[in-house]
Structures are given as structure tokens and as C-alpha cells.
Amino acid sequence: MTPTLRRLPQLVIGLLTFGVGLGLVVQGANGQGPWTVFHEGFADHTPLSIGTATIATGILLLIATLGLKVPIGIGTILNVALIGPATDATIWLVDTPDSTAGRAALTILGPLVTALGSGLYLGVHLGPGPRDGLMTGLNQRGLSVRTARFLIEAVAFTAGVVLGGTFGWGTVWWLLTIGPAVQWMLRPFDRGPLTRS
Image (cartoon, rainbow, N blue to C red; front, side, top):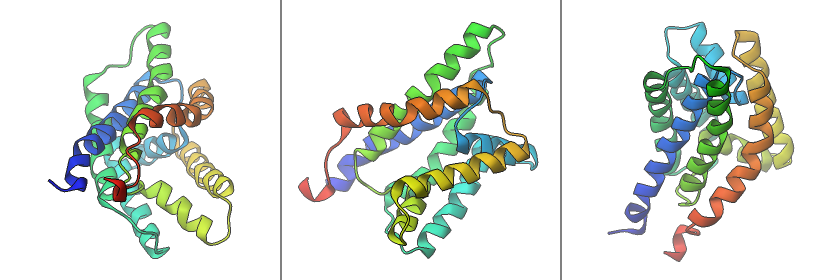
């Protein structure tokens, strides 16, 4: 079995877990991360579900990433293909709780589950997601990673708000927790660059 094939299960589990986290925060209904605000707003104005809007956005960003000549991998392709359906499945399976406490619990749990998924899929080093690829491409053209990431997230969030996506205290919670949580979750799952396998 090749090193890539050995890493595929962790990649797939990570991407599906990532999608579950996004679905949980949507059902928490207290606001979500910038990209999910955009996907929800996009879905509200089309026949698409939030998950399908995620896929459509991922395809467009993948094209932009290729245009910027950023290398992609199987992880990039599976990112586009798996996260959206996992999000939709979670939204279908998990109802928005009637209680304030239940909605708060989903809102708090969502980014932590997403961070676990990020740690799993990033740890296999099989290609960045299309949003990360776009950030890398802009960085290669002179923007700092921090500035590139901020601009991408700000544009997605602003467009999502204009389109009617849900934001609130959960958005603030997402922004405060997702970075540190991903960094913490990546440590136990990082398998190092593929060349080390």
C-alpha cells in the first residue's frame, strides 16, 4: 500500500468531521463562521442547499487556485467533494433545538468539531482545501498570510451578510476559537510531509 493510500482514511474521516461541525453550528442558529454565513446566504437565493453551495463555492475557488498556479492534491479535490454533503447530512439529521441551551451547545460544539476535522485532514499533508490554496496563492503574490486570510474571510462574510446569512455571537465564538482549536487538534494527528512516510 502506498503512503498516500495509507493516509486516505484519516483524510476522509477528517473532511467528514469538518462537515459535521459546520452542520452543527448551522443548527445552533446563533451565527456561524464567515464562510458558512456566505454559503447560507448563497443557498437562500438559489435552489441549492448549504452543502451544495459549499461545493459550488469550492469548485470556483479551486479554479481560482489553479489560475494562481498553486499545487493541489487529492486532499484538495476531496475537500470540495465531501465537506458539503457531510454538512447537509448533519443538518438533515440534527434538528435545531427548541431550547436556548440546546442551541448554544451546538454553537459552542460546532467549531470544536470542525477543528478536529481540520487537524485530521491537514495532518495527512495531501493537499490544502481550496480556501487555503487561494490564501497561499495570494501570499505568493506579495500579501502576507495574515492579510490574505483576513481579506478572503472578510469578503466571504460581508457577501454572506448581504445575502442574508446568519451571524451573531456564534460568529464571534467561531473567530475566537477556530484558530487555537485547529492548532491544538493538529498536534496529535500531524503525520508529517508525505516524503517522510
